[in-house]
Length: 318
Length: 318
Image (cartoon, rainbow over all chains, first blue to last red; front, side):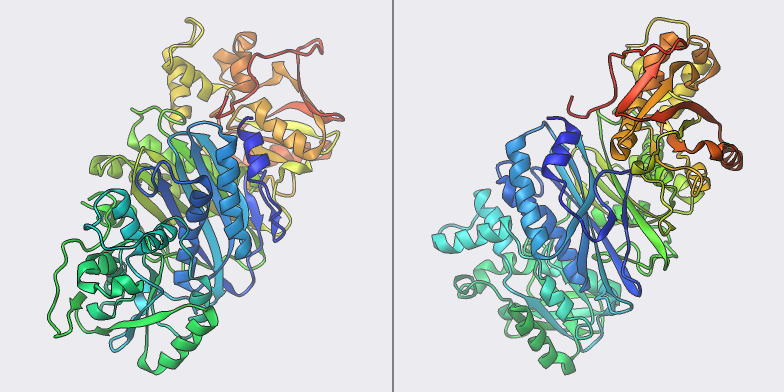
């Protein structure tokens, strides 16, 4: 099986909304008139973003999920994906599993794979995702305002816990197998918060997804908006056994990456609307702090004292 | 210098036509109403698409040029590019050179870098390029018709000759230093035929760019259009010293990749219009064959006999 057969066999599915899909020099698309187009690119490298022995299904899911999460953070409806793939060799079983994982998630959200590129090389995956929002309504990072509440969806710390366990760096004992299994699921099959992102249009001010760690990703919102935030350590949501020992797991909750939850800000007057949006999306949301004047995020304990963490977020070149 | 500083310092330039450029979860674009949107992705891997010691300027140019060439092959006006970059380490001198090469070409054609992703990993570069054409006018691969002329722009065989020389596989002697220098320039700094592609809208039928070799890329047009082609070996254009010894260099001309010329078909009635488009674009074009009934491309000598080549095109997994 050569390059072209691999593409035809495993990566060519109908893309009915495209004028022209896989197989020409470019795909041809007709964006919806009056909508703004959102475009984001993520690249995943073996040994850095995923372990070499991850199942191809999980990898197919995750490669698309992290891109869909960027669309969720803008409040965008995802429409088209493009996959660039460097593979060490033609491995049909791998391609079969990877494409299943990818297309299962794509179909769930009505995303079409409209093109891409395949070459030989160290295993590297890059997806370009495109989505749409009504004009002027996107959830941008620069829209947080002093007085806003800070919210986060779902649970924090699971992805980082799974990575730490895998690397043998998990603080000794205490977590049951089912908790560790839930963490592993989060790492392998993160769920992009697309319904929540779209439900927050016109409700939230600013948003970002938690890929590098809560404080790091919130930091991008703060820097872009020219504001600061107080985050209440005791409020950070996670699984019950982790919430029960919050101080022990605080670094994972506040600075652990790979969760793909949404962190967003919204005015006080929108509290009910935020909860209604979360209910509509079938997703937990938690108020974890507030936007204040200044710069940077301060993590506070129950007495209002600042807590210093060793690690504030993920930097690929650190 | 960390990941974010690297992006800010070397890869953030004004993107005035974007609603929101580098620095959020996604870029926000407003496609031109009534135009179709073209999207293409290419991935370049060290040791496969470029030599490890290529200059960073050349690599920056080439990474964008091969994507712009896809837009040229559609007749599209390129508008936005997204760069995904895996780097073994932060190397400021490299980033400086690479970004200069990339932005110099981008500015020449009015393309804006509107986003991307940076990570650590084996040197891998992937660009997603987006362009526009008036609705229904794109040069598609499936539009070749029986009786069409087959044309090619510029000169063939130069990129493949430079690769062969570099690998010590060049058939012994006979080519002067200035010819070899011209081949090396083509390999390092290919010129995307954007003006020609756009000038051919409404004139040509089908088009593809010559990245994997003339016969291979023409083969995609033939397969998509359900037709065959006769190609006249003696007509294939190249540099004068290569044309003077055509039989010796035929494999490079007919099957060598990396030239990024346009191969296109047009009806006989459009011959004058093709030449006018080429003159407008400041680019040589040569009539090299014709579309006939059947399937596949046949390379013919001066007596009409079919010529067999050892190598028909580039397959990344061959």
